[in-house]
Amino acid sequence: MVRVALDLLGGDGAPGVVADAARLVLTGRSDVDLVVVGPPDLARDLFAARGLADRQPRLAFAAAHGVVGMSDDPVRAVRARRDVTVRVAADLVRSGHADAFVSAGHSGAAVTAAVFSWGRLAGITKPALAVLLPAAARPVVLLDAGAGTAASADVLAQHALAGAAFARARGVAAPRVGLLTIGGEPGKGDRVRREAHEMLGALPIAYAGPVEGHDVAAGAVDVVVTDGFTGNVLLKGIEGAAAWTAERMAEAYGDPEPARAVLRAAASGDYAGGTVLGVAGVCVVAHGAARPEALAACIGLAAQAARDDLVGRTRAVLADLVLARGEAAASVPLTGLGSTAGTGHAHRDDVADPDDAADPDDAADPDDAVEAAAP
Image (cartoon, rainbow, N blue to C red; front, side, top):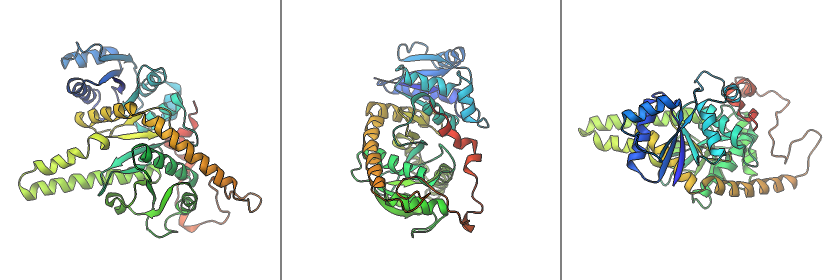
């Protein structure tokens, strides 16, 4: 039996949609218990209205009275307010009262709470949100899908290691890793992508080179690495295109059910939500607009990850990859004072790059401050 802590106040339709998702889990499967995290009186009223008041001991409640709003700074909110739902849920996992937690609320707050409560895995300074996307041959891992926004070349290299470890833990023997950019030729993209391309080529992974957006659905690689801003835009673009295609097919063929069934399948199971990679616990983040069925699928995804010890398996593979990266870096001699060759850390050229004139300042983005939330 796996117990999942569920954020009652997270998501566009909370708390009603969350209670409906919990009802689907409690009535539809017998291998998952729930700890609902939110105001206890509100939770009890919601579940009593759904006929679930007698679900003890499979249903428990944990008191939390605050929620991190979409306009809040996630690091400040999680640090300062001990009773926000994501922090209480993460602490339940740390104390052993839950095996995983799920939230459809502020993704940055969920990631911050996980880092704050559990700490990071070795070799990771900045966790990423990994989503599985349907592709031609097998699912593709996309990260970061929104845990942060901008990323340095070194952070993209960390994402590549974490994504490769995650894919291997899921059974892909030798995952091919691609760097998302604007062209398939080396040298395409901004300075960060060019630096990251060099770094990824030196990692102990099967780096396939730069990939474009259309390569994701084609399954050209098994893992696609990018920053959280670009990854989130790509993910939502795919979701919108899939919904539009399904509706047009439904209109064209007269029977909308087959097309809509395909769309529903793409929002369930392994595809339901994002898994936070790089932290020492299981956290699944659902889409803020998730309906009860999709949120219930996220609960199932979190339960399966905990049952399969996906974090432990990812940690073991990641440790080997980080060690190999360090050994490779140590074998490369420094070429001069101030050089970062072989260190695995990003550097900035002294000569201004005109292609980067419009790049945002990484440090100015509060959503990107998750790495400051040291446990």
